[in-house]
Image 1 (tube, one colour):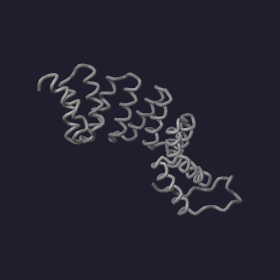
Image 2 (cartoon, helix red, strand yellow):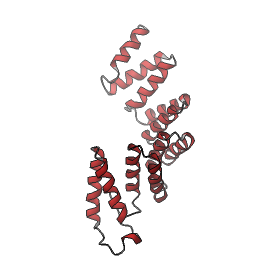
Image 3 (cartoon, helix red, strand yellow):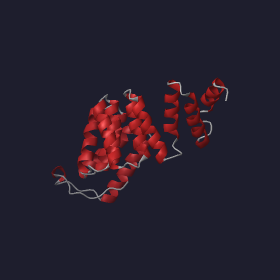
Image 4 (cartoon, one colour):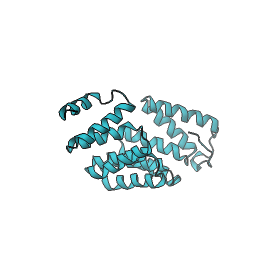
Length: 206
């Protein structure tokens, strides 16, 4: 992920502007700290960049994801809204927004944001899977099935939606369909669901 120059904000006037190369180093370090669970360091790095380059959409996005992980969902929505305002055609920002809104219990807004991500990038399997999880979270199990199946159509080796479908089929008594999903998942990721697969196969004597 690369940064790009935008005019400095008025708050930075009179201060020494940092070079883009240095800010890129700060960003890379913040992303690494974020991945390592060093959230305070990541937060500090993201904000340091935004103080110099407030129109860096990717930094607002990363900050929003971080704030959501910290349970600060209202702040996360604000940060992600900034990212979307700067780059309204970025599907990933809408997908992240959908996840944050779902975590806040804001069902309709979450589903709308998830669908917007798919409108912008309909061939992205991750976005269909994410929407399926959100729909499932709010009890729309039947609708979520379509999202999971679409994710698999777009990426045949995508194990996670296979497992979600298997759970749905298992709960609703469609054991043959559940077994098929588990077999497919197990083929791509051996051992991921062996115990449940054996249990269901024994249950219907396959």
